[in-house]
Length: 159
Image (tube, rainbow, N blue to C red; front, side, top):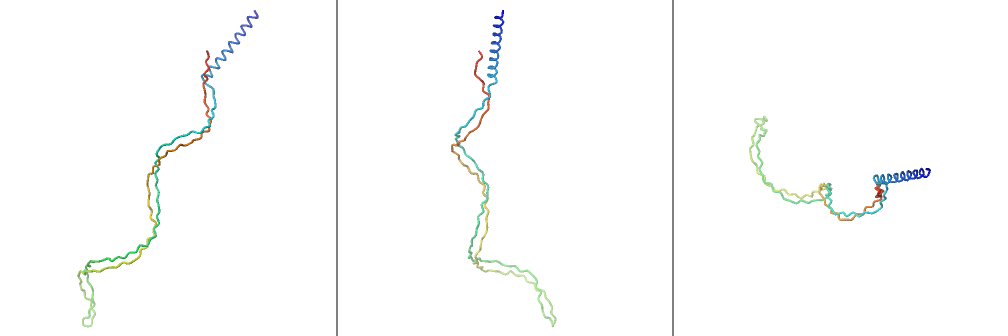
Protein backbone atom coordinates (compact mmCIF):
# COMPACT_ATOMS: atom_id res chain seq x y z
CA UNK A 1 0.00 0.00 0.00
CA UNK A 2 2.92 2.36 0.53
CA UNK A 3 3.94 1.89 -3.09
CA UNK A 4 0.51 3.00 -4.30
CA UNK A 5 0.62 6.07 -2.06
CA UNK A 6 4.03 6.97 -3.38
CA UNK A 7 2.90 6.35 -6.97
CA UNK A 8 -0.24 8.41 -6.37
CA UNK A 9 1.87 11.22 -4.84
CA UNK A 10 4.24 11.15 -7.84
CA UNK A 11 1.27 11.23 -10.28
CA UNK A 12 -0.22 14.19 -8.39
CA UNK A 13 3.11 16.05 -8.37
CA UNK A 14 3.70 15.37 -12.09
CA UNK A 15 0.13 16.42 -12.87
CA UNK A 16 0.49 19.62 -10.84
CA UNK A 17 3.85 20.38 -12.44
CA UNK A 18 2.49 19.73 -15.93
CA UNK A 19 -0.60 21.87 -15.19
CA UNK A 20 1.61 24.68 -13.92
CA UNK A 21 3.79 24.38 -17.04
CA UNK A 22 0.74 24.45 -19.35
CA UNK A 23 -0.76 27.38 -17.41
CA UNK A 24 2.54 29.29 -17.63
CA UNK A 25 2.75 28.65 -21.37
CA UNK A 26 -0.84 29.76 -21.90
CA UNK A 27 -0.25 32.93 -19.86
CA UNK A 28 2.94 33.73 -21.81
CA UNK A 29 1.16 33.02 -25.08
CA UNK A 30 -1.79 35.24 -24.14
CA UNK A 31 0.05 38.15 -22.43
CA UNK A 32 3.36 37.79 -24.24
CA UNK A 33 6.83 38.59 -23.02
CA UNK A 34 7.97 42.22 -22.66
CA UNK A 35 11.09 42.78 -24.73
CA UNK A 36 13.28 45.78 -25.61
CA UNK A 37 14.32 46.04 -29.24
CA UNK A 38 17.26 48.38 -29.88
CA UNK A 39 17.21 50.11 -33.28
CA UNK A 40 20.34 51.78 -34.57
CA UNK A 41 20.02 52.36 -38.29
CA UNK A 42 20.13 55.08 -40.95
CA UNK A 43 16.94 55.41 -43.01
CA UNK A 44 17.02 56.96 -46.50
CA UNK A 45 13.95 59.19 -47.08
CA UNK A 46 13.51 60.49 -50.66
CA UNK A 47 11.99 63.99 -50.89
CA UNK A 48 10.23 65.10 -54.05
CA UNK A 49 7.93 68.05 -53.44
CA UNK A 50 7.48 71.78 -53.95
CA UNK A 51 7.75 74.16 -51.02
CA UNK A 52 6.12 77.59 -51.19
CA UNK A 53 7.83 80.32 -49.16
CA UNK A 54 6.06 83.67 -48.74
CA UNK A 55 8.56 86.52 -48.42
CA UNK A 56 7.56 89.99 -47.31
CA UNK A 57 10.33 92.54 -46.91
CA UNK A 58 11.40 96.02 -47.92
CA UNK A 59 14.46 97.11 -49.82
CA UNK A 60 15.86 100.55 -49.11
CA UNK A 61 17.51 102.10 -52.16
CA UNK A 62 19.63 105.19 -51.54
CA UNK A 63 19.57 107.79 -54.31
CA UNK A 64 22.18 110.54 -54.42
CA UNK A 65 22.00 112.20 -57.80
CA UNK A 66 22.24 115.68 -59.25
CA UNK A 67 19.91 116.39 -62.16
CA UNK A 68 20.59 119.40 -64.33
CA UNK A 69 17.52 121.14 -65.70
CA UNK A 70 17.91 123.54 -68.57
CA UNK A 71 14.55 124.56 -69.89
CA UNK A 72 12.72 127.56 -71.25
CA UNK A 73 9.17 127.82 -69.99
CA UNK A 74 6.85 130.12 -71.93
CA UNK A 75 4.13 131.89 -69.97
CA UNK A 76 1.22 133.44 -71.75
CA UNK A 77 -1.59 134.63 -69.56
CA UNK A 78 -3.54 137.70 -68.61
CA UNK A 79 -4.17 139.22 -65.22
CA UNK A 80 -7.47 140.92 -64.47
CA UNK A 81 -7.18 144.02 -62.27
CA UNK A 82 -10.42 145.28 -60.72
CA UNK A 83 -9.63 147.65 -57.83
CA UNK A 84 -9.94 151.20 -56.53
CA UNK A 85 -6.77 153.13 -55.83
CA UNK A 86 -6.65 156.24 -53.59
CA UNK A 87 -4.60 158.87 -55.35
CA UNK A 88 -3.46 162.04 -53.55
CA UNK A 89 -4.41 165.31 -55.32
CA UNK A 90 -3.57 168.89 -54.51
CA UNK A 91 -6.72 170.92 -54.84
CA UNK A 92 -6.19 174.68 -54.01
CA UNK A 93 -3.34 173.83 -51.63
CA UNK A 94 -5.24 171.09 -49.83
CA UNK A 95 -4.20 167.48 -50.24
CA UNK A 96 -7.26 165.37 -51.09
CA UNK A 97 -7.34 161.63 -51.79
CA UNK A 98 -9.43 160.73 -54.75
CA UNK A 99 -10.71 157.20 -55.53
CA UNK A 100 -9.59 156.08 -58.97
CA UNK A 101 -11.20 152.85 -60.18
CA UNK A 102 -8.99 150.58 -62.27
CA UNK A 103 -10.54 147.77 -64.28
CA UNK A 104 -8.21 146.32 -66.86
CA UNK A 105 -7.01 142.99 -68.20
CA UNK A 106 -3.25 143.05 -68.62
CA UNK A 107 -1.72 140.44 -70.96
CA UNK A 108 1.56 138.83 -69.84
CA UNK A 109 3.71 137.01 -72.36
CA UNK A 110 7.22 136.06 -71.35
CA UNK A 111 9.73 133.19 -71.28
CA UNK A 112 11.39 131.98 -68.09
CA UNK A 113 14.72 130.30 -68.45
CA UNK A 114 15.51 127.55 -65.94
CA UNK A 115 19.10 126.48 -65.70
CA UNK A 116 19.47 124.86 -62.30
CA UNK A 117 20.94 121.72 -60.80
CA UNK A 118 18.57 119.76 -58.55
CA UNK A 119 20.16 117.53 -55.95
CA UNK A 120 18.22 114.41 -54.99
CA UNK A 121 19.46 112.69 -51.84
CA UNK A 122 16.74 110.32 -50.70
CA UNK A 123 16.23 106.78 -49.54
CA UNK A 124 13.35 105.12 -51.35
CA UNK A 125 11.67 102.12 -49.73
CA UNK A 126 10.46 99.38 -52.09
CA UNK A 127 8.10 96.87 -50.41
CA UNK A 128 8.38 93.30 -51.72
CA UNK A 129 5.70 90.68 -51.19
CA UNK A 130 6.41 87.55 -53.20
CA UNK A 131 5.73 83.82 -53.03
CA UNK A 132 8.77 81.73 -53.99
CA UNK A 133 8.43 78.07 -54.89
CA UNK A 134 11.36 75.73 -54.33
CA UNK A 135 11.39 72.21 -55.71
CA UNK A 136 13.03 69.69 -53.39
CA UNK A 137 14.41 66.54 -54.99
CA UNK A 138 16.83 65.02 -52.55
CA UNK A 139 17.48 61.88 -50.54
CA UNK A 140 17.76 62.64 -46.84
CA UNK A 141 19.57 60.22 -44.54
CA UNK A 142 17.87 60.12 -41.12
CA UNK A 143 19.72 58.34 -38.30
CA UNK A 144 17.50 56.37 -35.90
CA UNK A 145 18.94 55.38 -32.51
CA UNK A 146 16.21 54.25 -30.10
CA UNK A 147 14.86 51.37 -28.04
CA UNK A 148 11.30 50.10 -28.56
CA UNK A 149 9.55 48.30 -25.69
CA UNK A 150 6.83 45.84 -26.71
CA UNK A 151 5.14 42.58 -25.73
CA UNK A 152 5.75 39.61 -27.99
CA UNK A 153 3.37 36.61 -27.86
CA UNK A 154 5.10 33.23 -27.71
CA UNK A 155 4.10 30.79 -30.48
CA UNK A 156 4.26 27.65 -28.25
CA UNK A 157 1.38 25.27 -28.39
CA UNK A 158 -0.02 23.62 -25.30
CA UNK A 159 -1.00 20.32 -26.92
